[in-house]
Each structure stands twice: as structure tokens, then as C-alpha cells.
Amino acid sequence: MNLTIKNKLLGGFAVILLMLISTAFFMIIKFSESNDRFLKVVDISSRKVDLSNEISICVLDVARQEKNIILEIDQTRMLYFKDRIYKIQDSILKKTDELEALSDEEGKKILSQFTVIWNGYKPYLDSIVALTLKNENERATALSINKGLKTRDLITNLLSQLVEKNKKSM
Image 1 (cartoon, rainbow, N blue to C red):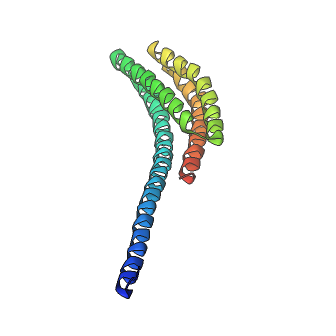
Image 2: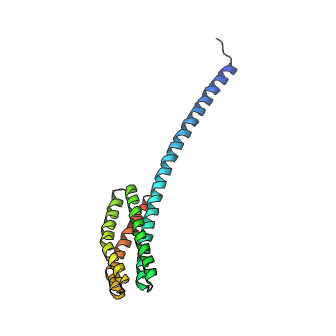
């Protein structure tokens, strides 16, 4: 079979074009897989940062509600602040569990330290609430200032470390 130069050129260009199309198709698939992996990493990392910040905000909110209940004189408002404190504590527990599921070993270590300190602080918080509801505000204030302030400082420092660690992992 005698092929003319025209047919040979067309055949060669067709083969090259077919190779380019198949390479482009292959690269599109690989870029799509790479993009999916990247989005998954970014979504998890950003969720860890968000949860870390949300836990920090909740701890500060508990402190604010603690101060509110101590300063309040109306029993109904005290009960409202008490409910807010316990709702925020539940929120902290849920967010901590969710963050622990997403965290690496170093993050789990920091969260474990946070959990130990936070669980150690809860009885003091319960005492502060109980004392305030009994109108023993001086004792509640002393407990809040002495034990509460030190514990919140420790917790805030731990959570700051966790936020920074999670930001760096992005």
C-alpha cells in the first residue's frame, strides 16, 4: 500500500492529536482527584480551627455567665444564668468530642489536658452557682476569683496552643 506524503502527515497528526487528547483526559482526572484530596484536607483543617475557637469562646462565655450569676440579685435571672452555664458546658463537651475525632496525636494530647482541667473546674463552677443561689455571693466571688481565674487562665492558654497548632497544620 502506497501512502502519499499527505496521508502520512495526516496519519501522524492524528496519532499526535489522539495522544494529546488522551493525555489531557488523564490529567483532568488526576487534577480532579488531587483537588478532592486538597479540599478534604482544607475542610478538616479549617473545621479543627473553627472548633478550637468555638471551644475558647464557650469557655469565655461560661466565665461571663458565672460573673453574671454572681452579680445578679433577681432569683429568676440567676436561674436563667445557671441554665446558660449548663447549656454552654454541654456545648463544650460536644465540640470537644468532635474536635478529638478530627485531631492528631498532639491535638488529642492538648485536648486531654484541657478535659482534665475543665472537669476539675466543673465542681467549683457548680459550687459557685449553688452559693450564689443561696445568696452567699461573697464566698462565690472568692471561689470564682481564686480557683476560677487560675483555671480559666490555664484553659485559655491550652486552647490558644491548640488554635495555633491547628492553624499551622493548615
